[in-house]
Length: 605
Image: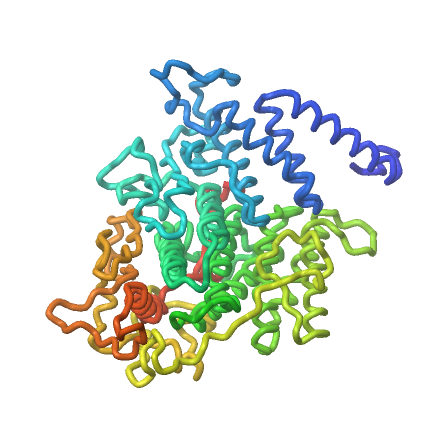
């Protein structure tokens, strides 16, 4: 509200805003309608960006239940026809595609709020596989032109089927069986359950949904899973899940259609037009990579060191993802005229900055300049949300709270060499870093006689020439030469294991008793140019036919008999140290990404 137009002072405007908000919230909570959902979404968006998440959480909970009451979690064709008791219908049926797409988009906005709430707090998601049976939103161009198109269903993982200890091969298909199948699709979604689903009608909003769900999967099915660090079987299951999720994220990036991945921003272009949804999808993917690789690069103190971890690769992955997130965020804020960004955008910048600060503090390496850039960008986001007024005080909305929290953490790190903070505390409610407890960084133990890792004399460093893509930032884990620490730990197995790159993709268990890592069924088969570059990774690499079994002289077990867990951990260690795993292209960079919409140039797709 403009005080000059309303002839009201700031206190009067603030009072009237609170009264209006209360009226809208009360009316929306008392009426189960689509309009009520839309009103509550506005309130939640405002509360989250204002730094009042504790007030937004109950409204998000109400939204997830109300959307179910209105039966907007399922497609109209997925009704319970034939059941003895059908649910009460509160929304009139419609045959108009534009109206149906509007309802579909309304659902996915609430879905994103639910997933962000879970990823930022560690709480369980409310919209589960039992509830959701929805098609992804169509490209904004079709929606704007009111041109009916069909998009694929988006599958949600079942929590019971995807818990650690179970292979992701057992999770429900990414897309429902009702999806139409064609022999020659124009495009394929990187989250598709098969290679024949036409995903060419998807837009930036749909890929933002997929990237956000990937972030939720890393949080729900990896970071929130309980693990007994002293139990080899638990450690094996946890590391297997890490590799499964890593492969899925890599493939999601790899199989983004060129329209949504390849850079075609002309160097002569006066203005870089970056689509907000597509930009958010890319930095959300990088955030998922940071959260997934951080516990591998900086294992907790309780980690018993059963197996040598690819620490250097994960540390460099976190660093590269954080640096590229800084580049993308900086470009977006510099060239985009929209007055504000949503809270998930600032959350991704916050996580990236924390990753850089954490590495600086535990390794004593110089703090990268991107940290200060991210803090500056967060203050810029905060200023945009407040509005560029004449006030000299720093805005204390959510983006401002993130920036202030980072500055306090930096001060605490500089003042106390023994200070540690919890990297996974994303709530940002406590602004005093001294109150934070953190798992202490633990270096991977040096290889010793009798350990499960190979003897150093048997190790070798493979040349990393089989990269998925040739172009990469200089910070890429595939481009940086291994340090002395890496040479002593991260190495592949002896020559008789040279078939790691041709590991089996069968879903059967290996002789070691551990199921092979899920070979993603959604890898499109209509991309011949990628057919030879997909890393086929298994939890249990199998020796080549006719080759003798590898020696296990270095394994110390009672009676000189290795356990199943020992052999499985050794095999998994080989896979994690293999060049095919280390060389994968994981991070979306500003150089190889396309952030604006060609053709119609429609924003907010």
